[in-house]
Image 1 (cartoon, helix red, strand yellow):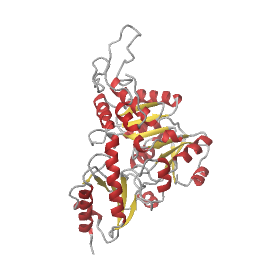
Image 2 (tube, helix red, strand yellow):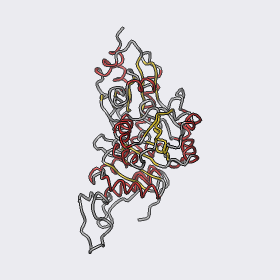
Image 3 (spheres, one colour):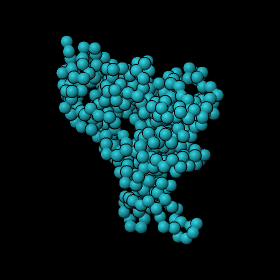
Length: 387
């Protein structure tokens, strides 16, 4: 059946390879198989072995490529597997510049794994394009950006990054986990590679682990296909099916997530016990205008710091509805302590320098009744006061 749609909300449901021509099933089947019978020696149906290709995974990969506006998509067993595959594009002696606050796992894999193979990195303020350009030496082969960045929600001008990398003939890589293609489409702004921890908003229900990569060229697609097959960190058929199912409701979920996040951020902004709020949807936030230019809205992630006369441990202890847990992007509200959880692998000195303090709290706004979320935060903040 010929597809006819123009809005991404419809594409989320009908994009990619949907349904099953043989039976008329409206959902892609789960091809739970490791191998495929060949027609004859040297002749097959397009599938030989499920590490190399699986119809359920392929449907997901075609879908995410379409949603991001890229040439090809690739599904991996986790967000870190996706990041590892992308970093495998580089060689000994290459250098990668990363944003000053990125997910701790990204830092860890660069510092503890890829550094062993001679791939170097430096941490730079990617919001200052002029200063950033001065840090690009002949060894630099890529800029790796999160926008908004985890956990301080720092916003980088993605179009400026794309222009800068093209000028210097290097790759631009954007982790789009916080925004998803529903809220932000980096490839349309000129970015070369987009990454997702699909565990988060794309899955949306805290019930799977997955990573996705989308590339903007045939050359990168061929390289990524080789790396995916050669290293084998592929997403399994059942999880691919679950992820397709999760993506179908992304727009309605994120609309509610964002609506709640805006109300929570504005409430915390005027709270006497809160020192600072980090949320790109606030006009007071430094990256507001840049984010408004490149994204649909401020997203559903925010961070905040309590004032000195509040005990952060008491805050976490007294939450009743919002869960203290790793991860984000599920239907339930979650909080974490970046300094000891998501970013614990980053050395203390670096955390302090970039602003990931011991008092920083990260909140993933869920889709519960927002008044109940706010009431829970209020109760925990009140209980945390120590003077």
